[in-house]
Image 1 (cartoon, rainbow, N blue to C red):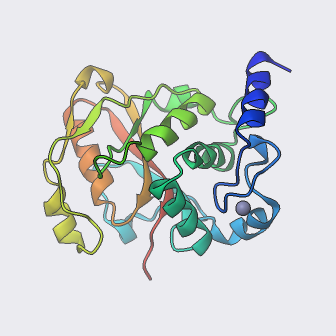
Image 2: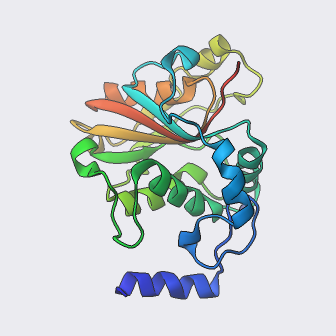
Amino acid sequence: MKLDRWMETGIDLIYPPRCPFCGTIIPSRWELLCPECREEEKAALHRPARIDREKHYYYCIESAAALYKYHHPLVQNGILRMKSSEPWYAAGFARLMAVRLYGYEPDKRKSLLDFSLEYGCIVPVPDSKTGRGYWVTGLMARELGRLVGLPVETKALKKIRSTVRQAGLDREERLTNLIGAFEVTSPEKVEGKKILLLDDIMTTGSTVSCCAQALLEAGAVSVCVICLAVSERG
Ligand SMILES: [Zn+2]
């Protein structure tokens, strides 16, 4: 067993890993889920992972994908828990993304796909709430980047203007609400790179589109989006 695997095992003994959906303690972080949630998870998967452009009207984005359907109760509850009080579930969800979407194999400690060829870095969508004390997409991006071997630029993109809560707004209102809300603060970190933009939930696609627009204006070559869950109507 390699040193980092020993360290993971040690950490798991001190802070037992939990199923990110329900909070049940699981024997090791690479179990990913408890047996009950593993059974239920199949119905919650968004398959194919690719997000249909017609349903979301996203722009400035080459492609978008999500692991789960947001409206499945299992997913909704898990995300609510992660966002409201238990930030360590972000790492659990990032591991699920690495394994389910990118073929990460814990035993081999590598992904099926070589991401260094596809992307220059991961950029997490900046937080919409202030004062929560932790940043869910930032935590997820760090763990995903570590697993798939991509650098994570947590300070490249910044929210420069506060916006009203997106929930409850229609598509037009969401876009207006977000115009000029994001800015690339360190263009050298994104210039000339293909970016993998990470968000927790994609609803209309307006947040990720506004982020992508700022990244492209700062010199990024392209932006692909990866989300934990997508909300799809109809
Ligand atoms: Zn569970």
